[in-house]
Length: 246
Image 1: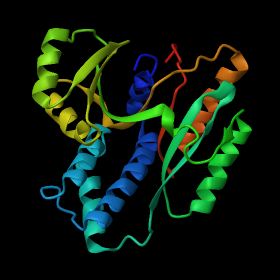
Image 2 (image 1 turned 120 degrees about the vertical axis):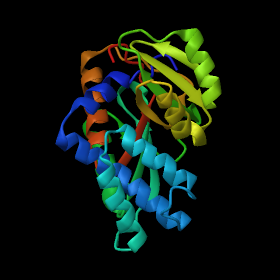
Image 3 (image 1 turned 180 degrees about the vertical axis):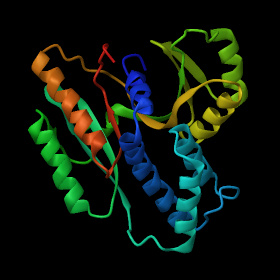
Image 4 (image 1 turned 90 degrees about the vertical axis):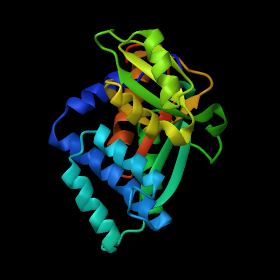
């Protein structure tokens, strides 16, 4: 997973104030509402998927009161929007593979916006499957190691106890790998051990990476990722750009 460093961005966003936090909550709220609708249960004690999403919300500094209000709203059936999953695939500058996972109540609107972003910033949106084969879904838990105090031997022991498979040390971060459906649970266990969890979720991990050397390509790719992640319908963006500056 070398080159997939996005943790500096996560740290920055965790430090941002109300605007960024509200946008994160909007995205996680949609996931929670869809989960409750699909499973028919708003009780995290009996809904493992919901429990993982609540853990994700808490790891993103969402206040417990906000989460409780959302659960009551979903349980009461007052949410009228019907969100559906959709994935858009395409290429950024110089052939960087990009996957955009969305939850939307209007496919036409979302598809039009995503296509516009690709076109405007040096890429193009492709057909379903055009880049998916370059990625593998995997559980990823990122731990803050800015002070470089994490001991590799101790972490390995904790990772195995938490249900993880392996880990790697990146610049200021320890990245733990696990199965896609156990990321939140592994993150919660590691948090109990005293680690600071930056993120814990299933991600699309690329098998190969692309480097950008031209300033114009780097600028456009950076902007493309920013506008995609800023869109309320977009839940997560995966790509195979190796950016050593992140």
